[in-house]
Length: 80
Image 1: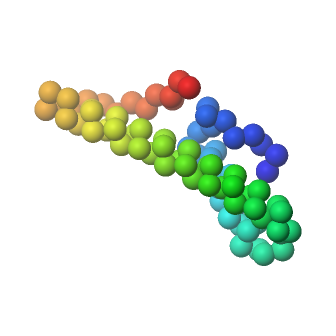
Image 2 (image 1 turned 135 degrees about the horizontal axis):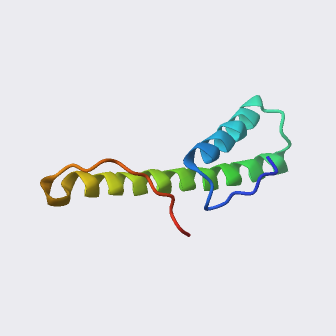
């Protein structure tokens, strides 16, 4: 879990790290201080995933409603 969270992280990478955190916490044998750190990191990853999904949703709305015509769906990474 030493990987740093980055705004350039893909949705899939963030979800993978989040799943690893959940597995560790569910095992229940993590010391309290580490559990708190993992929980905080998980919340940040969850927020990152939520933001990425909302951005894709906005792009889809734009694509589907622009001039009443549907355009091909193209995902571009966010520049941050």
